[in-house]
Length: 338
Image 1 (spheres, helix red, strand yellow):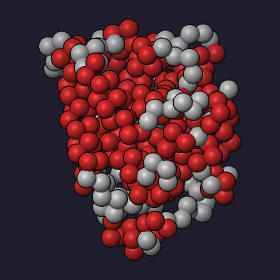
Image 2: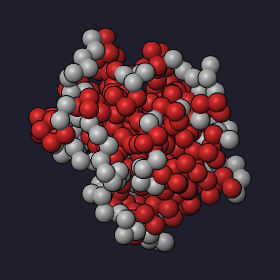
Image 3: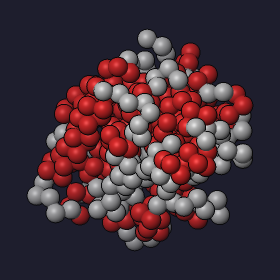
């Protein structure tokens, strides 16, 4: 099993995430024929100059900073909500927050600023947009967490903005996939491992981390609330498994596993793009960016998975060295790889 230390999985995952984000930024909101007219053959797509990222990478870094602050104070626990909340508010106020961020994140971050509101009242309980799991990779990369800490942290960071149970479950599942790949799991076994994890956690509500979030929904119990999210994730994992049984690398992955605007589809289509080209990480990014859906988020997730699997050396130096926020990505990656 390849260790995170030798392959620098955290650095590889964070840089891959940002590269996918930058590659998909110009193609988001375009259909595939339009992308091909704009960019040429998809297997030859070039990283834009300058290599500018979107809110996906910005919020990943905000989460990473929040986690680092929380862990500087001691064992990671539900009190991570406060430093992560502060980082999300700072992102929301930043003049660099001009990359077409999602309305759910903006609305929730505005509410998170209100000192009289518990964060559960800021959470957008009806939203399962992909904005929660496109930023969750750091939770899968931080070393030394227990399974309970990782699941709780992944779901809590989602719930600060996206409180829908499917957003929580997809964030948990995405972080788990990143961790498995970083620690040497066989990509051929990944979908089965994720399905087992989803089944094992289907009725587990992390009350210590989420508090009474579930009461903002119409569900009769916390277990019923969270099971709705896991059931949608199990359904998309079945679609992913069927797509991989008859792989079609030249076909838009969104046609198999969804356009990625919602959490479970972004996870599955990012995974599909990665799993079609396990040993060709740049091709995986290009495939993810040449999609008819939420191309930057799909490619950002594909890059996080590929980088966790292959490590920092997966990415061409001429790409990695000029990605926006390169210094902060490298600093966080080095911290967690150590």
